[in-house]
Length: 264
Image (cartoon, rainbow, N blue to C red; front, side, top):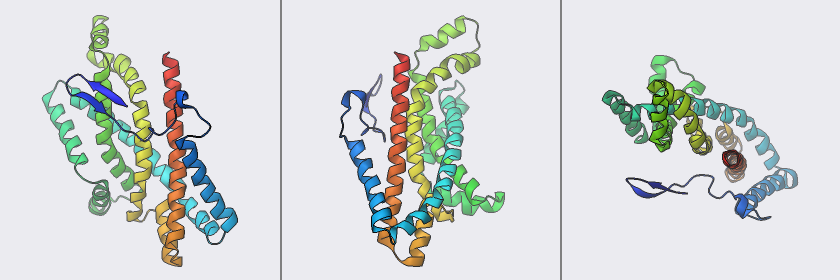
């Protein structure tokens, strides 16, 4: 999707939902349907036709799905809160807030998520007594909060300045205008982008296996250690992640499509 920035010129943004068909592209066969059909067929063939050892592998790794979803859901909420305050800090009139928000974004985006996860769990965890799940949620929240901050900043700045001026003319304070006028409109704009970040976070949550959390990938690694069936196990892990990601991508696209219909 191409966006036109007043100062930077044309900018291309690529998201996880780009391969999803729009209403204008509705066909019986399209890339999304073909991909998910192949993934589901692969799982069904492995589990119900080939069976041993794929049925046992599936039963083992699917037990990690609740932890994967739980950590991702907690982290997306935390990153939205951090991102909102970061976005507001970047456009604030106070120079100190601009600097704090800017340093946070540049610092966090410059450090790999895996390094942040290990640092928070093994280093800071000794001082704050953090268990695996809280450490994972905090690390993902902090990492994705920086990206969310950019999303919120862009969303707020996309609202016409006349909206703020009109709210101030009606007697609202700047804070009230931001809370009751600007942010509700911003949420409608950034919601699809937040959905895409949720999908990306779900995939990146596989990194929590390095701190011994028994998510989908960790259970797969443990099964490989017991049985040495690395090809079969990791193929099943990949297909499970693929199906979950494709379903979530579709839900995000449906949500975005419904929002566009309400705007008409």
